[in-house]
Length: 250
Ligand SMILES: [Zn+2]
Image 1: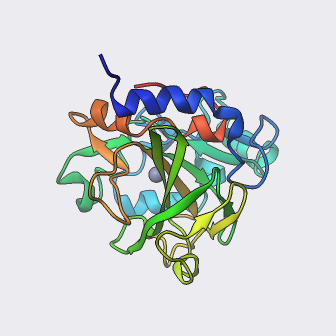
Image 2 (image 1 turned 90 degrees about the vertical axis):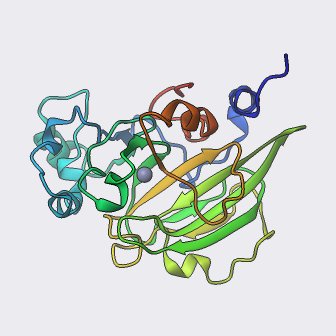
């Protein structure tokens, strides 16, 4: 029986893990990165009843974003690891969307990409030779803001897309559809809150197998019912990022 495209992509990503260039320009390691936990089990986040309150807490992201492996969260974040990048969230069930009407109407709560906390204007580099599939500014509140989707040929008959959300508006200015980006080439910059959908600056990074007819946008969050299919179609970005956790396979 022929394997479906998602299964073939997952196998090819695993085979090619060493070929990907670091999207921040340097490898993520235990020295410079830690796991981000925005899941429903994060007690630090349960205090926030309203989406606005929640978004405000993201201003203090490196202070409040909780780390699963420690109980002395604030102390640790304040004094020891404030300089570290935080990333994670693939397959995570989150309640942060429940407070925003743009998500709650469709009960979307399972995160399909990885978020990386980064400062405004941090450069993002292309992980693998690709071309611009599409781009647009998804400017609704709590949407992606400026977004780029690249298309990549990984192996014969295996191609995939990478989505970069919450970029700066300037990142889209000189782009053209079909434009080629080499592995390691500067692709874009992180946007600030006034332009990125209203979030604390971060990158939403997602791998997509079958993008269908979508252009410049693709769901980054799925309902629980759709999650198994969507997570299979959007393999764990850890295959490309390589850290902090082993890829999860759906
Ligand atoms: Zn995200």
